[in-house]
Amino acid sequence: MESGIMETYVMGIATEQEIEQITSLKKQYPEFEQELAKLEYDMEILALGMAIPPPPGVLAKIENEVNEIQLRDQKVEKFTARDHAAGYDDIRKDRYIEVESSSSHMRIHKAWRWVFAAVFVLGKIFLGFAIYYYLENRQAKEQINELKLEIKQGIQRR
Amino acid sequence: MSEVILNISKEASKDIRQFYDKYAGMLLGFIQGTIQDPKKSEAHLIKILTSFILEAKLNPQGKSSTWMLLRQHAQKILAQEQLTDTESMITSDYASVNPDQLSLKEKEIFNAVYYLGRSVSYLAASFGEEENSIRIQLKSSIDKMRRLREN
Image (cartoon, each protein chain N blue to C red):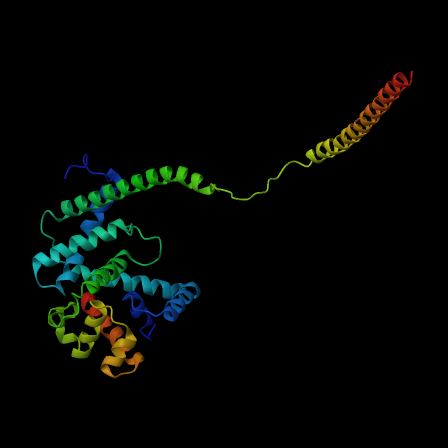
C-alpha cells in the first residue's frame, strides 16, 4: 500500500503487470480492496470539490445528441438488414456459375451401354442376313441366267 | 426536450439525468482545468458525456468507479484533440486548491497524471528520476489532498 501502486491504479496509469498485482491483492486481502474503494471514493469527493455547475440547457443538448445518434444508428441498421436480404438472392445466384461448355464429349448413364451392345449385335446379325440374302439372290440370278441360256440353246438345237 | 419525441426510453432518460446530475459538474471542473474557454469546455462536456452515455458506461459492470472511467474517457478524448498538452493547466490545476501543502514537483506530477494521463515511466524519464520515486511522490500528493479534505 505504501508503494503507490493503488494510486497509479486509481489514476488509470497502472501497467498490465500492476493491474494483475492489484487484482491478485484484492482477492487475497479484503482490507486492500476496502482501502482501494476508499481511495476511489476520496478521488471522487476531491473531484466533487472542484466541480463547476454546468450552464442550463446542457442536459437537453446531451439528450438530443444521444437521441439523434441512436436514430441514425437504427436507420443504418435497417438499411444494412435490407441490403443483407437483397444481397441473399444475389449470393444464391452467385453460388452457381453458368458454364458455356465447348467440350465435344458427352456423359450418359451406364444403362445405355447394354442398349448400345444390343444395337451393335443386332446390326451385325442384320448385316450377316443382308450379305447372305445378297449372295443368295446373286446366285439365284446366275442360275436363272444359266437356265435361260440352256433353254435358248435347246430351242436352237431343235 | 419532451420525452415523447425522444427515441430513448423513459428509464434510459432517467439514468442519463441521474448520471448528469452526479457527474456533469465534476467533469466540467476537470475540463476547465485544461480548457479555459467556457464555451469550448461546454462543447467538450457535451461531447464527452454523449459518447460516454452511448458507450453504455453509466453502470459499469466492473469494479472500477464510474468517475474513474469517465475521467479516463475524458482524458482520451481531450488527448485525441491535443487539447490537454498545454502549460496553462499547470497553473490552474486540481492540486492548486491548497497549493501550500504540495511541493511544486508533486503538483507537476499530479497534474501530468490527472489531466494528461502520463505514465510513471514517461514522468520518470522526463524528470530524470526513478519510477519508484515518481510513484511515491504521486501517492504523497494524493495523500496530502485527502488529509486536507478530511480536515
